Length: 443
Image (tube, rainbow, N blue to C red; front, side, top):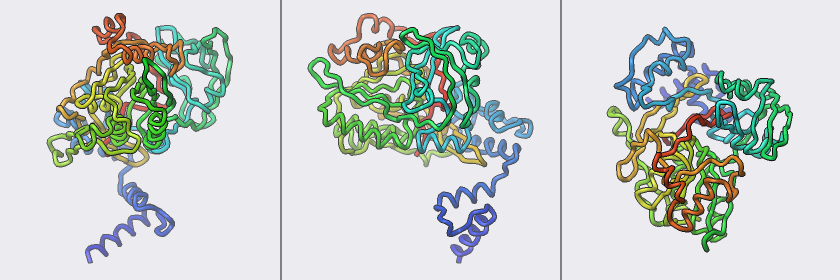
């Protein structure tokens, strides 16, 4: 009888929400529609949703102030006012639901298809270009210098903080005019138009003969839903090639899903880690019952490596960092490059109206109970993100240092000296065109 009443209530709410029952909706879609129908999507209603959610699940809920939600013009403004900024460096954020779904489910966003780096007060250089994107079609390449955008010089854009906004909103059809200089010193005057771009989750998989060994090299762009099958294909290729070492390049990887990090770590660790604790998700003291052990899995084509070298920069964040932290109790993990972002915590996702709240809800501890790298994971061998060479080129600074370490078992003298200062390049910063934030999202 109770089930019948509940079913009738859900049917009524679904009808109120405009869902035609029997029209092919999944249970999840039906529940989402019902949830949306029940929500107050006024500004005040959205602000209250964020307040109430944070008070319950936020890892640092005891540090939250309690301002009047009615005094803020948006839930984003409310979140910015209350998040615990002593450690929450924008780890908690709000984004649009459609854009979020495209990125996490399909590794897609609307844009031009490149990342850039601010390398000085007057210089912006291209760090990465996605294949089959508008920027790739225009001839943009890693290492190119962006001279002007829409008539504004690079120095002007950097000084006013418009290196991202100058390219316009994330809408199909938005155009931008760019003057850039390629690595050969040739200037190009191009017009680009935004469209849906697919980020290649595993951008490069190759092997390199070095020191009598077959070394695998994988450039990993993110930890989203399509990443796991792409990793399976990559490790199948490496296994067939006889790879016994691996350089994992996550220099621009801002993270993603816990389950994908677990998948990658399991492919790396193989039998030596199967069934062992990878990461423990430790929630606040209201939700200790939700604490969860994420264990290494048994996967085909796992390499079962004895050691790992990871290339990082200050843009390597969240899931990228927890993958390093989770493997270190079991195998030596050598970090080459520069100090990582510093995010040993993860988020849970809360849909409301047409938005998504990512709230920090747990610490991500490894098997030794370690989860304290808010200042980032320092490099063992410091090396440059060498924009004068393509990613995957063995002459590129960080990859060259990684290969040297695998050959001789130590850093070069210059890399060791730089590592002593836990190098974090001053004045440099990655501009993420997709607007993504560092993520480590609970299952």
